[in-house]
Image (tube, rainbow, N blue to C red; front, side, top):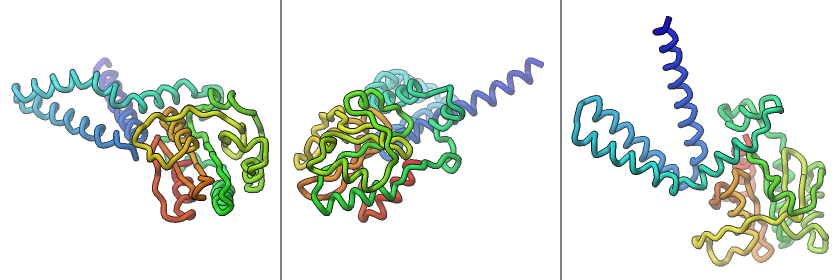
Length: 257
């Protein structure tokens, strides 16, 4: 009986570790940290292989490297660790399926009902008229800590509403707009500004704020420049390149799955 229980526990142990590694990869995918993550996995597998082959010297060297490397990982992955903890802390266990949805184990099970066409068309229109805009789309992490800095709303999402909010003479145009599912839930929101020195100087406070919020959470950010009329897409603190607005639309659909 104990042997059967042990085997079941071993299987569960392997499954949970596999799920954890899968989610960590999803968390760092598309960032510079993904190469570091892959490198760590390769070194760990090499360490297991040296132990299996009883290569004591190389095994001890790799073992020491892994032991010391744990502290380095905390520094290297501090943004990703923060996002992971925010996701766990912001999970609402009272809502059916919310916990598992936040892990996004299946891409096809949970489709966002956010009107992406309305967002992209509004950005294109505002770009043509050189109207500045900063749009934040919530994903797993709650954004209550920034929503409280602005005006809370509950407006159905559509293109005319987005454009009217960011109209230059509108009292709501200054600051960021928060979108949850298919609702505009806050306007005039003040976001944390990134201090990353690698951001080109041509980008202003809107872009730095977009980078800042996506560094601290898994939210998506769209910025329309009032100087150039160009739309920027920021995810995980990085600028995502795209050729056309149709490509931007597809990227948003993929990231909101």
